[in-house]
Length: 401
Length: 143
Image 1 (cartoon, rainbow over the protein chains, first blue to last red):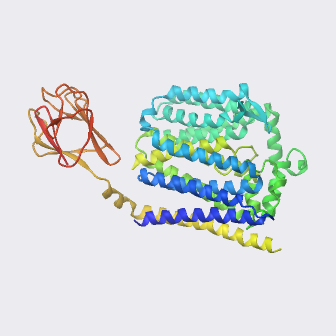
Image 2 (image 1 turned 180 degrees about the vertical axis):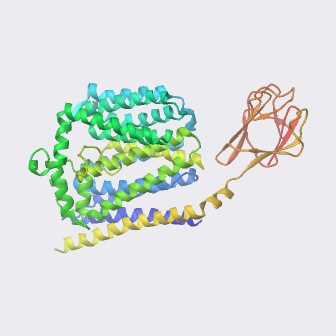
Image 3 (image 1 turned 60 degrees about the vertical axis):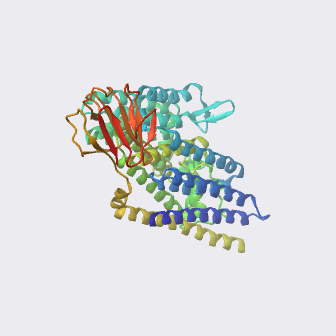
């Protein structure tokens, strides 16, 4: 079959990309760094094996989702390796765990329709994970959204996202033209947004807003609800601008970062400098100075990539995200029932809004809020959650055929 | 100096590969969209139940074929997908379902049993084309 051969070709290009990138990293260090080649081999083997499993046992599903996800992960791992070797080894372990999670989701998860009535379980999960960080969270980098349990730190809002999407999907799946059915989901969304603002995690608040508005529109297909939501959002934004200092600070930085370049807006200014110094094709791996950008492995990895590999790679990453989003939406279109459809829409909106918020933030297009770039950034939970979400979408795409 | 020129080459190669990946993916998707619909439909195997003898059921006719898509429930109660008006059939007698391109027959602990190729079926069994199934006085051939 032609399509099969083409897909294998695509896979070969991914191996090539991986090997070339790590080869580059190997030889730029003065004593030649053979560890990089080991990393390349491990990554290739992992991608190849997972692709083989998916193709062998689930030929009906959409294989592009995994391919795009692995391209993004490869770029991420390469960049993290160049910035911080220790993090990248952790990252590759997380990549392995996430890919395993992805496959297990596809293999183990029974028919998704079975989950569609667990609405209140999902609701409980959402509220627990959302509230967790407010109550027992620790503050890292200015937002109180981390929870440390037994030396293992994670962001509960990431897990909350999965439950949130599942809850909204099961709450909105039976929507039949009555406004009353929307009140309960609306209250839940507001409570979640409230928690996020209290935790000073504005990026997640934006993501939650993006997810809920997309799912609302897909479920009801009414523009007036969407407009109402935007109205409420504007009102909420105004109120939180008045109430909270950190919101005001972010907006102030966004409007004009230059007067505060040495303190409050240091991050954004450095990131813009670094993107600008990269130019069209970048400085080349290992030759730029992304170390001036703070938090360069997670939130600002987009700036680091743009500096070393150029804005062309930056565009390419956005295009790949777009294609990933397109494939996810395609799974939603082909899905058999409303619940799966809304689930797929919600998860793809989750990835897409995350990319918009962080890529926009790094280039100061919208107020900067620190969240991870899905699949590219350093961060275990983020990667695991994204792969689990993609696993569910993969499952849906398989059922849909 | 040669180090930086080397990295220069590398970065162009890397950008090139990333764009090749994007274009290859786009081409596959385009082909997928253009000719995908027809090719895929013929690949999916369709199953059906041919009625060999309708027994007492008046709603069945000899030689008719019942298509099997996803799940087919068989029984005496009216909310089954295939209703058998037969005193020997249980309320919820048996179930046919698809898994990974195979069709599986499951007996739902019926009183008088489901006979597959002359033997009483216990639990579940994969069906092959030509298998004969009888429930009460009704018999089918799986095709």
